[in-house]
Image 1 (cartoon, helix red, strand yellow):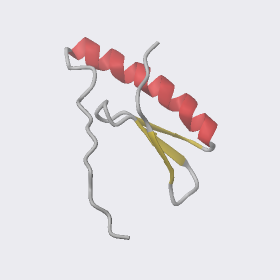
Image 2 (cartoon, one colour):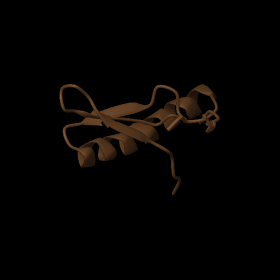
Image 3 (cartoon, one colour):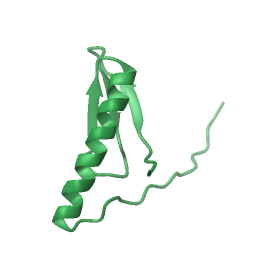
Image 4 (cartoon, helix red, strand yellow):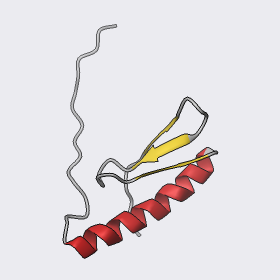
Amino acid sequence: MARFPVTIYQDEEGWFVVECPVIPGCMSQGRTREEAIRNIREAIQLCLEVRREKGLPLTIQSLEVEIPTHA
């Protein structure tokens, strides 16, 4: 079992949009948060299969940068 970071937000129409930032183009959505999470699991599996078949790296590097905040 592998773990991948995902981001999730609700769009203007109420859909939950979820993306896996370490796999280019890997995203999904759902009417509920739970549905979106289920859908991104399937999307990640499919994206990894396609990247493997094409000989592409499975993931890209993800970093965090520190930004000063002004309170």
